[in-house]
Amino acid sequence: MTGMEWPVVSVFSGAMGLDLGLEQAGITPNLAIEVDPYCCLTIRKNRPKIDTWEEDIEKIDGKGIRKRLGNPKDVSLMVGGPPCQSFCPGGKRAALSDPRGNLIYTYLKLIKEVRPMFFVLENVGNLVTAALNHRPISERPGKHWNLSVYATKTTDRDNDTEAMRPDELSGSAIRQILKDVGGLGYGISFSVVDAAEYGAPQHRLRFLMFGARDSSAPKLLPPTNGRQAGSQPLRTVGDAISDLKNNPGPHSEYTPDVAKYFALIPPGGNWRNLPRHLQREALGEASYQAGGGKTGFFRRLSWDAPSPTITGKANRKGSALCHPESIRPLSVKECARLQGFPDDWKISGAMNRQYSQVGNAVPVHLGIAIGRTLLGAAACDGSKTSHDHFEGALDQAIKRLRSAARNKRGHDDRQASFCGFTQ
Image 1 (cartoon, rainbow, N blue to C red):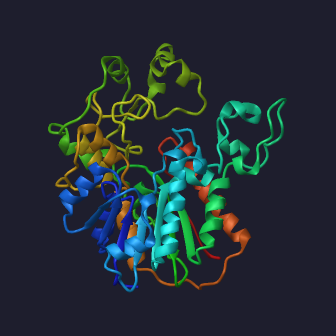
Image 2 (cartoon, rainbow, N blue to C red; image 1 turned 180 degrees about the vertical axis):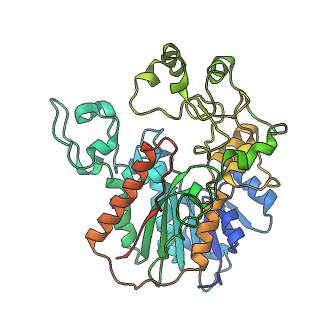
Image 3 (cartoon, helix red, strand yellow; image 1 turned 135 degrees about the horizontal axis):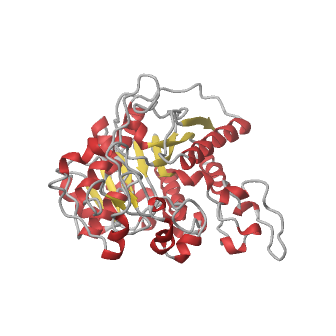
């Protein structure tokens, strides 16, 4: 396949980070489907020629999409990243029991009805360890906060606590999704990748699935940045935004109570760099006593490394990204730069809406890699892959995710794990 002959549909388009990447690779979306009115304003302001359908995705069906496109003979591609909050490590990890998680199935339903030649499903990397149904930590045997403990073994009854059910175990969500995707009749491939290894100046772990209707699915191109032989160096915060130090554009502010802690944290540090007697005070009792490394609290960026994942909440102590030198959150423009948006991309709405749109976007650099992968897709051997091979590939994706979690810098010198299979 050397081009996209038929229409391209973008679902959950947001501020169009993924779509901008596709566009830069040579794939231009014809239809953007998005429910958020501020995102729709952003799309219309920057790409007025794209048909922007402002509607709740659950009110749309395949017939409506084809009609909107002018009833084409075929559709080349559907791309979408259903809202992922229910899988994020900072949330309650309710997974598919959360309505936002179930939007994955809304997206799969549209794929089944439209039958595009290719589809892309993008989500958070933590999708591969999420449970199909969420059980609160206080009700789990042993009360472990880390769901990975319940991957296979720690499932026995604990005093009056019921044993974990199979659908409450780590990895049960992705196994169900893969089983259901297999029923669509597509060859699929999936991976967990770090956007930094594709040129983004931030570490952002994402789950990517490619689907191919008439062949084996393509494999994401090898990383272009990192420690792999022949790769370019990882891009840093300094590479992306150092020229904005004196003119960052609008940004939010920290409250004095939050700013006083950031003043004590060096570039590249977080709450653990605070004097020990201030750590509990800074986090608050509930957060301090919670499990996990809490590395998202009170982070100050370093000029010399990629940024952590850009979030949509710039001034919260639990998700903040403080400027390397100034005691302030990154500006909207700085966040957009780290996401790969060009400076002339106009983000609509109030400042908090702008931060949210930028933080929820797919990095443009990752979109470019996805686009180039699709345009250069070559058929694999088309043979069916055994269940054992599938499990092995999923295991590699989970290892990739956990390796990044263990590494403070969030990266290593290994390429993304990848698997292709057809059911």
